[in-house]
Length: 462
Image (cartoon, rainbow, N blue to C red; front, side, top):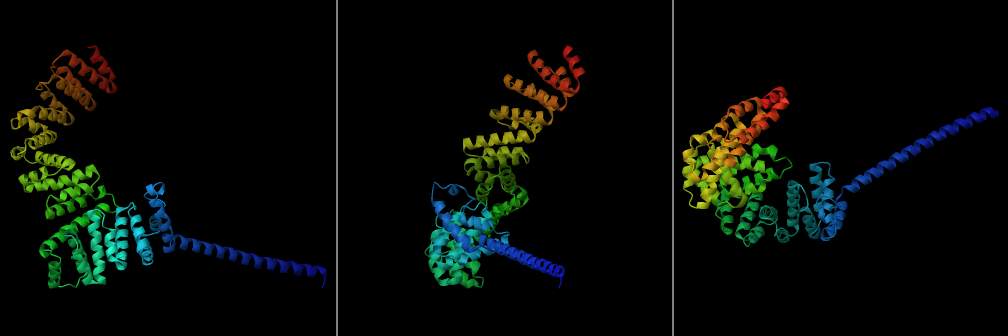
């Protein structure tokens, strides 16, 4: 075989060997990367990782100097664990997988960390799952863990404990429920009945008798509580409350119809947006006022603090749009002089803002000590809504300082709205003094100069 042929064969063999080696190397790299990715993914979202993060973060929470202890949403084992889930379903699945491998010590730590979850809806879901798991291990310790929570969370989680406990050992759950305070007994009975769907009427009555609870009152309370729970879920969900205004108003009406105006205090506390709060409470109070003015007014006067002021303003606004004469009669029946004056002030202001012309037509209805207040508010409203009508009432004002202030306010507003009309008023109106007329004309001419400089200049020269 010639040397040339041997060289050709050697070259082909080397090329083939290189190709095989390259393919093998590529496959090895791809396989290695895939394995690393799989291990990374599994390692970043697993109960073991969460347990390790939880133990580390619990020490940080107890350290006052720890930066993370002051940050609700960073470096917390449970929070990081939950945030890794790509969907709500997988988050729930992972949470229950984690809880299945925990003991009471770790459950205590997880519950403490759950208090730092920013989303109220996610916090409630997580805490309920933790406490239900806690109950399967030690129901009494579960009750101790939730002992110092606020009433709304405490009662809800008591129901969760007894719902779970009654499925494990109904007799033991009932026996312990009998040792609770009366308010906690209601929550316990609710949890038991929610989980024990097959109880007959007689069995329910026997349970109520053992817990010293009136069953009919309890069932009525269950409906009211279900409305309250639905309200809390709606407020706490991840949707904007302002976008849910119609739903909140509807549910607020249902709640107040069932529980009375006492529910307004809870509605007030749960709504943070002041505009939304006025819209919801305003709708509820207006309906109550139409149904029973006297009772509604008396109950509102029993409110305290900012809620009382807001409710009084709301009722005053509602009355202004319904019947001012009836309003004065109802307000006059208020026994407390201070409360009566407060309500009158709110109403007169609301009436003047709602229908200023009606205020002047029925001026005699207003107590003398509030007529100046009514007159001022009515004129200010007319300046904004009908400046040409407000001018005729300015001459009636006896306070010269206030007359000057309102006249200048009218000049500014009217000139911005229609400078020519304002100029005509300034040239034909009889002012109380030449200096006031000069101030009014100067104010209007400055606005007119931007629209019609020639007319402004000619008027100034004249």
